[in-house]
Length: 493
Ligand code: MCA
Ligand code: AMP
Image 1: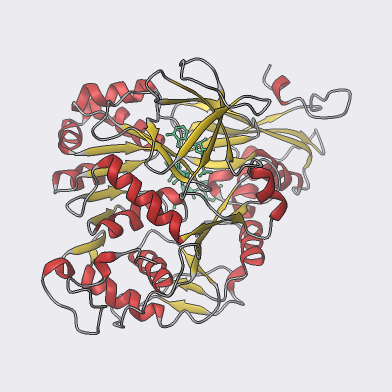
Image 2: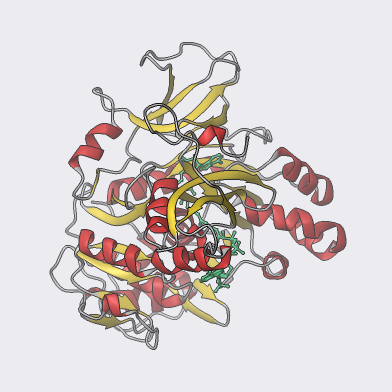
């Protein structure tokens, strides 16, 4: 198949050899994480060397800290023709054990010195050496070969591994290049985590496919954004929580407003950016944030185009190659765009995942008989085709800080706490996080209920810190219907 990273092959079409040409694209900085950076030449050499070490198995895990090594690990794995399984380095023991058992990686790639938890002790460890040199191997993959397995929460049960083929990476990144006029001249800044599609595929693999640069902040803060945009970065990617924090900081930070005003493109995604934040940023900077809509299973589906109208509250139009329809409850497609009729978004195209790993049942359920993927997102289409997302089918999926979190997974973790007799989890509106996780608890002993902090720590340690309840409410009993099913809508009433 065509190479995922044309810029890792030098200008004459020759693959990387040990010696690194100092000029041209190869002398250009590809990746920068704080003070550390790699040129295309060095990246080709380091990732080429790593590709030679990952072995013959199908999949390797990547301990996805926000560091240079993570980017080299994923690129090296892809150059080797293998699939990478990015791991959240803050994963708790239960979540990590599930992902390892399910994806069965042959090794874990990590930054030298990174401390790995006991759950990974039985896996061979490969330290990523960013100073190593080796040739970029010949690409023998086909476009349907898996590139990534990314774990994503459902309403119940543990996260499922979405198998993302190489074709989908190429298709989505090239469609975004078209929509955003994204080229090798662009320098992206972001502070997103590297174990999800947003930060890894769009934020790292995107610039590398274009032959441009990315500067990762290590962790998001508004000072870092301002510094990089003032220093030549042209694009910013973030989740709504990050843009909300920018909007909050703008009134007291004229330097930030000036820096954002310089950007070519400010892009938000992973959840809806409230219109109020759109408007505050536009008023202070003169720039409009544009939104794109995607999903782990589909990569990117729609976007406001760089040459289109930036309309707050919409996610723009389908990307090139993506077929999108809205479907009524009974399965009929909605004809015409009236800006009012709500239907479920279904998509088809080369951007889609192939399957949930080891979950043929879930894979079948995710598609219609004629091959459309059911997103579970509800939307309307404006008369000119712009998509406006209005909600979600499942109330048991929570989007907090841009992370998708299944209520069932947290309920199961809470029920494993000895002080909890019954548990229900809901999402509540939150100005910063979009939604915050609320745990409704019936304590085993009403005289000494476990504290909110204890329950948050319990969930953070079992699953991941972003899945911890931010609020705990204690009840004598959960509201249930005649069938015994918990009535979540009655909670909070
Ligand atoms: C707090 N911490 C804890 C606990 N409480 N650790 C252990 N136990 C506890 N009880 C730690 C956290 O690990 C973290 O550590 C720090 O305290 C702050 O945590 P938190 O409050 O959760 O962070 P935040 O400041 O609220 O984070 C906001 C954020 C974050 C930075 C916006 O939510 C974020 O990075 N979101 C991005 C999500 C994303 O990329 N989604 C894409 C998936 P430390 O200080 O060490 O960090 S969606 C996708 O990919 C699709 C395709 C799409 O469309 O994009
Ligand atoms: P994830 O499964 O974590 O990849 O999250 C995918 C979900 O994020 C989608 O199904 C949407 O519900 C949501 N999402 C992503 N981008 C947007 C956006 N721009 N506006 C509203 N929701 C979004």
